[in-house]
Length: 333
Image 1: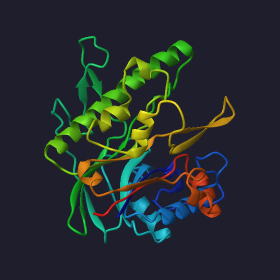
Image 2: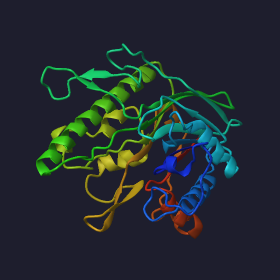
Image 3: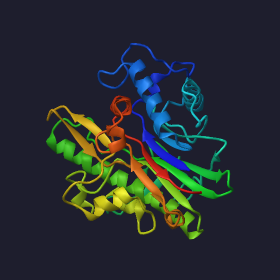
Image 4: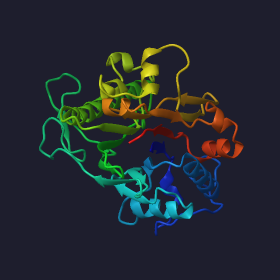
């Protein structure tokens, strides 16, 4: 079975008010890419990875005039994808949802949130976590701008496990008017992101105690050494979430190798420096039950993966489709 996570940059802009795919010559939200070009590129990528389930990060909007599930199922029909069913969780107001597209012949997935709104340790993910972020003896209220998607999964072979799709908040200092304000906002955002990581970790702990096979996928927007404020807090959110009982080989390599080349899953244009920045942001973490099944991970990076590089149509599509690249996990379950 192949499980994937894929952050599709502004997927929402590729659908009309009736949740139909728009593939015309107007500009998409990606720089210098039309909607037709991005749609076609995404079709090539989705068909190439041919996954049994794809955790879509920045999935199409869910609101009064938009439906995440309808949009993704329309997209699947357009390209005759096996992942023709979609399940989504708690909607948010960012136009960037989290949803799982899956092949109903291979598995069944249902939204299965844990916790309650009044839980003080790990509330339901659309709730509020009260935690002291800055050691001032006063509780701060933390929320997810994009509540993680919790799923109960059953494969066609009868294997049951729990899956969480996550997209943690960016640490960019939006709205800063000067360097001092940018530093203040960046530190505050990192505190909030680490609190979200603690919240996620607490939920994971509850499943691991129950010996539930666990898988966590998505864009954590963080990693060891990603910014200059990490030293203030000691650990990245990736380290908090993975603990000692979850594993992703790319995260493990990055954590053990502070200097030198590390895997990357995203590529961003830095306008001020006139160059691209590559970063490891997307992960597929698994618990020990999965590790014992000899899983195989792959980052579909167009310049780093030899098979992608040697397939010009796929290589170009990966660059056009999004600023992130898919990560897949192949495993016998």
